[in-house]
Length: 451
Ligand code: ADP
Image 1 (cartoon, rainbow, N blue to C red):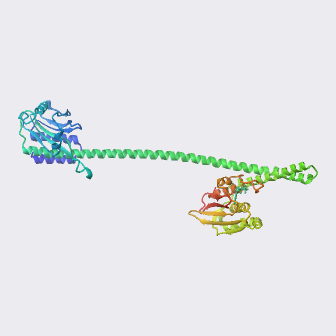
Image 2 (cartoon, protein in one colour):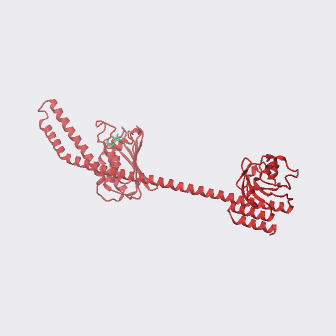
Image 3 (cartoon, rainbow, N blue to C red):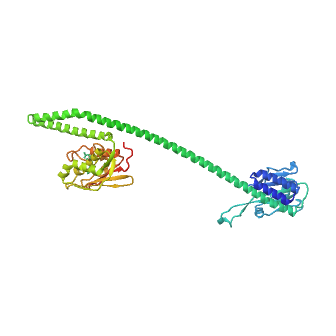
């Protein structure tokens, strides 16, 4: 077969397959046949410039050196550069006086009489900034032909052939390297994908667990709230009757015996009457508070203007007595429980009147539409609240004053809080001591779930 034909055949095979070792094996066999030499092999350098015989085709199996690690003691770093520039070396006869004794001794071990050595150079992609300082090819290995039993003068065509072949081999190697890189990248991608999937699964599981726990806690909380409300309701309801008896009998006692006994007895009876009245107030308020959650009324569209009118009318006397000034803006309609919304306004406005200063109360009422809710406010010019108590005042029976200073049981704002929450909103206060207070509450524009 012609040199060009063999080369074309090998080149085609290299481009069609990725099985490097097999390609190289067939290549050395065909080359040896064409050269009719004793041995053709491919030698791959290792990092320390020793190397290993990767594939080999040999005439006589006794001379086989495949898989051997060979370190040429005469190979000097100085040879690397010429090889890298594509230099070919050939020796017609190792005893012809052209090679060093060291090299003769080395070649003799492998029964070499004559050799032809061509470098295999792999091109490298190098970044622009290093283009001038670093070589663009790597000296990967050598393609070597040996004559073991006779001397041989290598023809130019043969040298040319081996050189061209080394270029093809380099292509095959480069291809295999890229393929390996690709496989590695694929593998890494697959691993990181699997890793990610595991992470997502774990996270989802954790979230599900937390969700389930939250749900359970919520249910427990709802249950215990309901139980508490029921308890408060039963206690306050059932206590009312005997308490009314105590109140009326102590009052009777007072009417009948006041002035007939000594002053000490009058005082004691007075305390008993006061205590009973106070207890009645507390119990009535507790009952009112416990009933907010279960009014049983269905929610309807409520005009908060009308609701406010009603609340103001209920407070008519107090407003008049204190000469209070009401400044109001138009208010929207919401979905809610009319009675409870009246109570909400009433409690807030009553407090604005109750906690006034020496000045007449000036109460501003308004609302504004936000994204999916309305924001309402009741602003007064009263005594104000120390901000550190702004949460506490919404808890039941929490007061910041004695009964002597201001009457009350500390349930008004707790009821407001409950009503607003039941309507799906929030309530809070913004104030400074001595600066008046503004109570804000929100109600959703669309009422969905009302507890
Ligand atoms: P009560 O008025 O019966 O004490 P509330 O629950 O209505 O109960 O109010 C709780 C506490 O919040 C009050 O004791 C008072 O100290 C404070 N407070 C409520 N409204 C105002 C207001 N408009 N200005 C100043 N303090 C207020």
